[in-house]
Image (cartoon, rainbow, N blue to C red; front, side):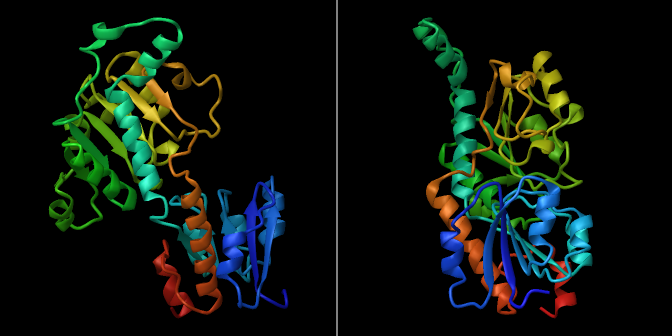
Amino acid sequence: MPDRPQVVLISSYDDPMVEERAALEGIDCDLVCAPVSSQGEIFEAIKEATVVLNYQFDIPREMLDQMDNCKLMIRYGHGYDTVDLKAATDNGVMVTNIAGATSEEVSNHALALILACARDIKRKDRAMTEGNWIGNDSRSVARRIYGETLGVIGMGNIGRATARKGVALGMNVLVYDPYVGPWLATEYKVEFVDDVETIFSESDYISLHTPLNPETHHIVNSDTLALMKPDAYVINTARGPVVDEDALLAALEDKKIAGAALDVFEQEPPDPANPLLHMENVIVTPHIAGSSEIGWTTICRRAGEEAARALRGERPNVVVNPEVLPKLGL
């Protein structure tokens, strides 16, 4: 067992950890960055850690069962599906994410994709760069947005920001989220629906903002896609496996829906041969929805602050497996 608590960042590169070091200043601990590229390297780096700072790597039960010193696992960003939550709870490890740090960035990206779909930006840009001036002949193609229906699945920090921006554009916003209070309907001027099928059948644009878990895995599938309007779009800035890509591809090829915009994929990076990357009615970006310089700085600083709380014996601000707290006396 180390003489002092270890705070270990696992990353694909050597990070100076400027914000994290500032947040942990004055706390007696060893703070190290461990560049890793395999599961074996990950375990060697974190096996004695008290706090693990994790950009993106998978942490399975096999690792957690052998991490006797670990108190806290911090996932940078919103998603925490790479950590086995049940195993973390069984081993007395709190798991936190940095919820809300880049809600504006992700919601802006979702909105940009919605607007790009509505205004047919991809095809128009491609036509222009290939020397084809369409001009006024394309007036009937682009859509208005105002008065159309935006369906938001998941009303957490990002979903709320997206709903707010949709309302500001004059859209009718429908929301499905069985885990939030109905008072949000009044606060955000949206309409909550009781089942996800209503979102799929009534929306012109469906924007996904759920975590990835067994309940949301492939929530977009052949059955839900079959409910959609033929001129509707799916926008995913959440997690790739929320969408069944085979079912989505089939719906697009059969012209059951108008198109899609994807920032995340079931496999990342996606296979270059993935047909979704090469369709003119699918807009793709490389999992950058949460990206901005200030957003990343905020994530790093808050990760350091959560680590500091854990080392002081305090409860972190966000614990995504709160059932572990009684085990820790917090």
